[in-house]
Length: 200
Image (cartoon, rainbow, N blue to C red; front, side, top):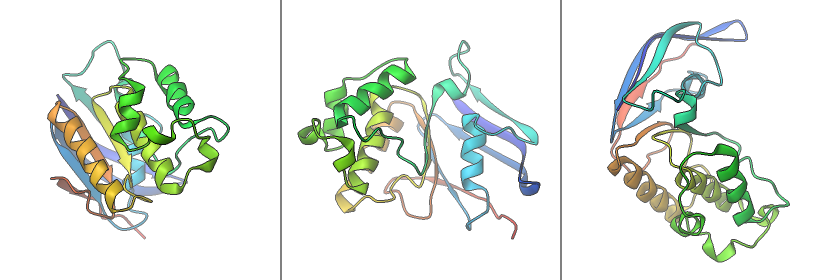
């Protein structure tokens, strides 16, 4: 599987964020998108996820499921954790499994993998910022998709949480998945760097 972008141009609010951007990522590879604030790291992830349309250029996924769009084969993990506070940890994960559809993994195993099985009954309103991020990461495991688009994925995670994240991502890559992560921080995994310069 290969994800590729060619000649990408992004314009937001009448301002050109980046232009003539090329990138690629192969199965089993993690790419860290780095650059200063405002350079377009989040915008690039949103373009790949289909949440924004490029002003120019193309994004293609070779070797994926021809019956599904690129967006349907990708997980997008943004800054907001998108949890329903009145639902329990387990109920939130069940909601996302039903909403996203596709091939589901065992929910209990997904929560165990991120260290939340012991509080599966707890309403999400009571979770700390780090626990909320762990539950968002569980969503990546609970519904299997080959492409993970992660925006500052280790934010709010303590050292143990960062180590957990690295294990989860390593497992995804070992299964042939692709990770594109916008980040200011080391991810604890081997990555190839894609630098975006940005304009002030």
